[in-house]
Structures are given as structure tokens and as C-alpha cells.
Length: 247
Image (cartoon, rainbow, N blue to C red; front, side):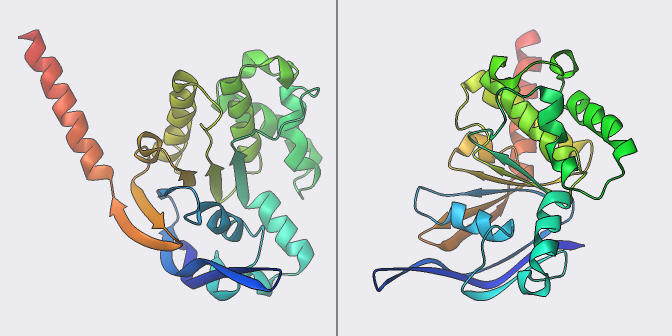
């Protein structure tokens, strides 16, 4: 079932009478349960596209539907509700409350949701457990490492069981080992738990955790490539080498 559908999507910005086109008639769809990376160099339109997909900003041309409905078909309150309950967001800068505990940070989306309060504690603990941080649940987040803080952000994005997780450069502020740990969590959320994930990145290694890559350049889709078969091939080669080395 189609969750995200963009048709001839355009975005322009006007500054001091000068109009700048950022997105040029982009068309694509994302099915429920897909893991898609959106990749491209700086200035390619990745962040602009993410803001549109996440109902954080409107577009100036074409059509965008999330779960079958456009932004214009929602009231402002409904848009806020969709963002809070149906979309999860993970950002490069974490966006956590440093002096609040892991528990309280993960609880934040529930404060603005329609979930019964009796469910909150179970949801929070389940989300924290899924990212492997139960031993840190009472820690203030400023005491955590960068990788741990990003895992808190992932837990926060999961607490309302959203239809999709938007991850915007989630490894951008992390060292290589922490970045891989975060990507393995996102991969498990997709492969094992079936979450739909849309990943924004400029890093090829990070992008290839997904099963499909949209490559943007100058506001247009240059390539829309499945990458699952390539990953399987790489794993086969790696396994074959290990087996050969044992002989």
C-alpha cells in the first residue's frame, strides 16, 4: 500500500524579488514497509524535500499525498496530529532536552498525543528497550555519548508507533562506530519490525543500509535504484572470502 506519493513536486523560494527553484517536478512513491534513502550533494534539495514529506512546509507545485491525503485536506490541528502520531523524526542534532532524563525525553510526543495516559509508561519503556538503553533510562541526556543521544531520539520517534520514521542525517554528528550502531538499529527496525524508514544522507555507506536509493541532483531525481540485490551480492562475496580463508 502506498504511504508517500509525490507527483511533479515543485518548490520555489522568493527572496528580494528573485525566485529560486529548488525542486523541479519530482515524482516518486514509497510503499509501507520500505526503507528508502534519499541521497545527494549539498544543495540538491534533500532537506527541502524532507520538510515537504514531513508536513513541515508546503510545496509550490505538483501534488504530495501522505497516506492518501494532501496537506491541504487537513486542518492545522490535524497536520500537527499527523506529525506527532503518524510520523517520527530523527535529526542530526538530536533535539533533546539535555537536563531531562531519557524517560522524559521519550515521553514528550505522548504529551501532545491522544494516547491514554495509562499506556504511556509501557510505550516509553518499550521504545527505550528497542534501542538498548534501559540501563540509561533515568540518566539526564547531557550525560550520554553522541551515539546514545541519537538512540534516545530514535526511541522518541518510536513511542507513538508512527507510520514512518524520517531520519535526517542521523549519523552526521557521530563517529564511525556510533554511526554504524545507529544505522544497525534503524535497519533492524525495518528488517525485523517492518517500519517504513525514509533516510536523508549524503554518505554512500549510510545510504546503502536502505533497500532503495533516490539520488537527487539540482532538485531532480537522477536515479531511483534498488540496492538490496547489491547488498546481498556483497554479503555473498564477503562470506565466500571468509569460507575460503578457513580452508
